Length: 330
Image 1 (tube, one colour):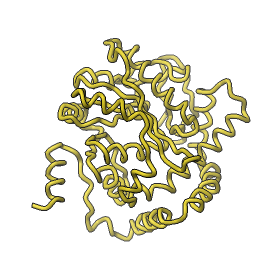
Image 2 (cartoon, helix red, strand yellow):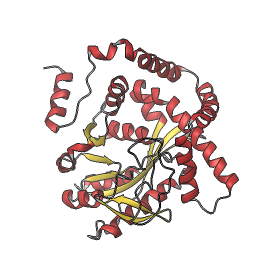
Image 3 (cartoon, rainbow, N blue to C red):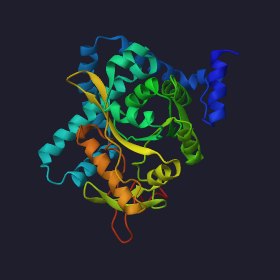
Image 4 (cartoon, one colour):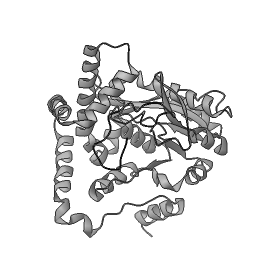
């Protein structure tokens, strides 16, 4: 049996979903996607000053074309940073789109970069917290907020250690194939969100870390309302439940692009203390506080285009404009 067959068998045994390359991926409707992959490869080979120079112009273009998404970013910045002046928020908005462009232009590093390039251009800070827990046999959940550099930290961690994560498959099968290939290139396995927590618990008990992204607003079910930057947010309680069931420690993290060093950074902090407490609201607030601390490392590099406060407590008005789509009152 080949090494590829061994790897496929291991992933199937783990229950992870697969995204194999098939003849259907080469249909004419996806030729544009293949051109995009070719462009990503070219960008990966260009001198770094040229790529960084492109990010500024592309960021301005994305900002102008963002439309409704830009309105969400502006509203989130207004809600989360009320002490900032309009001019300061405008500067942060500009920086957000510049960094969004930079991380997009650099995806060729994830898709086509060599192991040595990943090691040189993605650094992990605070790794001693993870190593100390694993040396003592404690399972580890990495609390990974939706930052623009999220995938960079995940790939580097999976290069060094064996881990798993959840993801929602992309609708475009070519992009899903290359993205899944990148995320599972070293040791990582990816599970679909609708598989629930059981696969994560099994893998944690096998000694694999779990790269968990619990900061989306997925509705009121399975959530409690607690503060996030001073605004009530429907916050998932699954992290505390997962930590309790697996007896895992939770390491907060945040990943961002360090422009001065031209590197991607993921920082790990010490594990959450007295977590879980058994009180859903206390645990959810502790999680949000850890995410806030991460965002403070690079405030323009959180995924501010998410509708973080979509779900409101009963009786409260919506915080975002209604979408212009029939049947949707978000």
